[in-house]
Amino acid sequence: AADIAKKAGDTKNAERYLATAKTYNSEIESTMFTTQGNLKSENSDGEYFIRIGQDKDPNSSTTLNANNGRKGFDKKQILDGGFLELVRYGVRDALAPSIVKTLPEYDDETLVDNLQVRYTFNFADGSGSFPGYRRYGNDGYGEDEVTGNNYAEGGNNTPGQRGRVWPFFTGERGHYEIAAANATNSLDAMKQQAIKDTYVKGMEAFANEGMMLPEQVWDGVGNNKAGYQLGEGTNSATPLAWTHAEYIKLLRSVSDKHVWDHYPVVEDALK
Image (cartoon, rainbow, N blue to C red):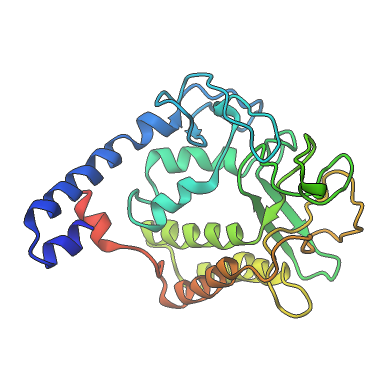
């Protein structure tokens, strides 16, 4: 916004917008990065990004509001992959300490199912092993894991509702891997191919027979009343345009050898 205002000759607002952005930027870790995390895992050092809470202290034990029917938890237990977008848009370097420190917890598949975010999918057709991610821990936007009913079936939320894996976030992680490889000058042909084989093919593996990408796929947790196959789209929005856009952007980013929807103006302004 500051850049647009500057180009339009609106110096006053350009300065105001940039100052506001710098203030927000300076508060990211102090409001959303806990140094006293309480996730029960051998892979956690207690330092990671959390889902934004109602207060500005990331080390407090504030209980988050209910998430689509699921009772709120201590915010220090809720991982949210949104921190990767800080890298995509140029707000944080791919190797920024707060980003790198959060990856072990984000990728931890030993957490209890309700707080676990990453799941590895091995498809029956032998196509490979691919990572998938939920929106955040304790997400309730999906099928009920106790009864197997669809989300809010009958118009009412239920305590057992569980948000499943979203193919979109496989693409999001692929974009981060491109940025991280560039940060270490290691995005060679071999690394490009590895990203294709893991994240591009991973998104493709989640598509249905009509090549449509779903909002959510079955993660294997709870009552499989509908009889879904692992990695198969659930009764969620299909196709999800947002996910198809991410797939196309990931293809472009791999081809260009840099994140396509990265904003240099943001990165330059916040230095």
